[in-house]
Image 1: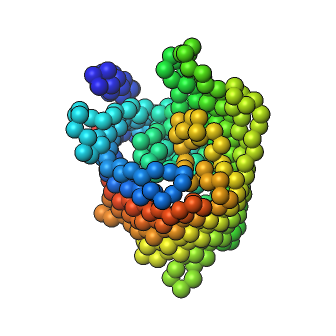
Image 2: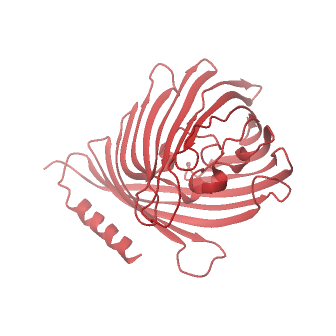
Length: 355
């Protein structure tokens, strides 16, 4: 913790030494999230029951200049509610540069995961993973089309583990994209993962190549005040554990998502039909796979019915989300309930002119 505070102090000193420039502006702010997430999965075969209740505060400071450039330093302060062993459960640094133009975004450093538009399927990241791993360490580039609002293509490199004696090297190379014509959407997500050995000679772990490609087609319809979303996707993976098997596995499946929304209330159904998409889970667990564990099913299908509410208040500074799911993994039924409150505050001051 003391080392982290020294890093923050050093970053603040560097920000203060930036030369005065036209339209330079010092910005301060804070993000706050508290999440209650409860899983009741005792009748299911591919996940466990547990409860998460935690809060995270992210104070931040930075400089904006030349209209489109920004430099930020922030710290994620996490406290698991009900856990009294120490003052903070965890703390992590954010430090990044961003260039934001009307149709182009470039980022480098350690920045919030919410800056990425792709990989929204629960196959890639579960709600719990997104909460505790809310940062990307690497680079992001996204281009948005002018003729088709909502259309984009994105590239991300996320370096999640630097190899040492206790840590396995891991990273993800990600590309996503979508085009919108009328109410129709055509898109894809591709994630190429690498999960390698650490430097501990006593561990006997393999090197895993982990690739997912998920093209999809969807349609959005506004009817009688309701928003209807239909999306059909195909999931193809290629996975290999070079040490234990040294052969490629290619589990695949299809997914249908249907949602009906109004007044912030959404009723949805997500149906998956296919093979076990997490074949190496028993050996590497959630260190390798970060999505919902229901995709481990070997019963040929799983289904999730969700009733949720989401809305923003006070000029979009406060966001409230909550819901309940009824899930079937081919063996049994389970439920999940969550409530998340998010606050985003950002202020600019001390605007300077070129001397």
